[in-house]
Amino acid sequence: MSLFLDSAIAAEAEAAKKLGWVKGITTNPTLLGKSPLPVETILKQLAQLTPGPVFYQLMASEFDEMVAEGRTAFELIGKQTVLKIPASLVGFQVVAALAPEIPCAVTAIYSAAQAAVSQEAGAKYAIAYVNRATRLLGDGVALVREMASVVAGSNTEIMAASIKSPQEAVASLQAGAHHLTLPLAMLQSITNHELSAQTIDEFAENGRGILQST
Image (cartoon, rainbow, N blue to C red; front, side, top):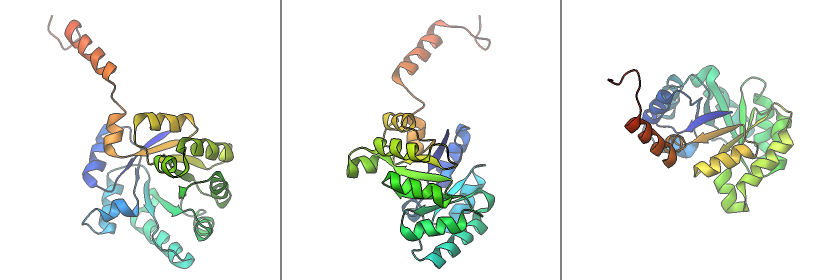
């Protein structure tokens, strides 16, 4: 299981790096569109701020252009590249074409059938938008569970995105997600619990350690 930062902001990537347990960075066109910097600059910055994968989502819509865009992204990011390719007829064709040379993730999946095609096309990741699927379909966690069942035993791993609470994050993992990608605030939020804070305060008030004076 790995936790990823979902962001295209270098300062957030730097903060995630300092946490020490965030394994990579996912981006999407919306996140990249919020920055005034050129996309190429952002991707290079992000690649320098994580030792792990950097996910880039293709914007082209035709097969040849998508393949060319994917290879261009690989030239920019290098071996850290994971291409996010939307689930569609042409998208799965692109995955099949590029997966032997560049790791691919199929994104915007809303059915277990699409997860099955992701596996057959050679995708390394199949991405479910959990909260969005709950709003549109009724139960995003159930979607994760169905996807995980379909790809069990294969080389395709489930990544849960669109997570809006620690409870939703845990439910996604319990449903079979291999990875989560979360905004920085959510990554920070899942480290805390009010009872943990209370216990820490009690230790600080009543305890002793090697750095405290006798």
